[in-house]
Length: 105
Ligand code: SF4
Ligand code: SF4
Figure 1 (cartoon, rainbow, N blue to C red):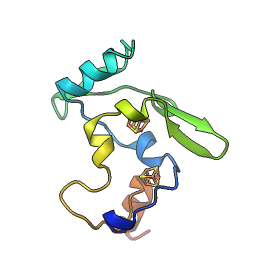
Figure 2: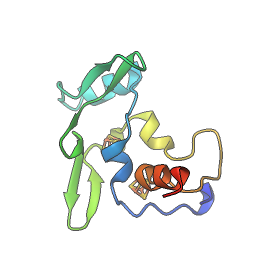
Figure 3: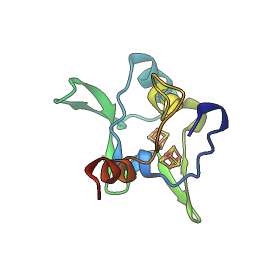
Figure 4: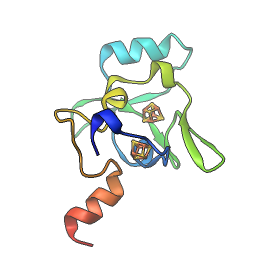
């Protein structure tokens, strides 16, 4: 998958399974939308992260067979960059599928 031709299928896997680290700017921007209980402290990475419920990120919504971000225009920086952080090419953007592939399953 190349950044220039990447086409997100809105499968939602990244919003369900990944941990989204938040910057101060991310939190201020989302708070301005009226949200309060959307972050928590992650003791492993020692940073604030987006809260999750049993269905993944608290801002994820299912519409038909697609998953959509309910704060898309104000989503965190990490979500904007995903899945291209320090490269323009990735094997797969789906975290669970990627994990299986790396384990050779
Ligand atoms: S903020 Fe939006 S894009 Fe980011 S993880 Fe949550 S639902 Fe996905
Ligand atoms: S895992 Fe990939 S295809 Fe699925 S929603 Fe995330 S970026 Fe889009």
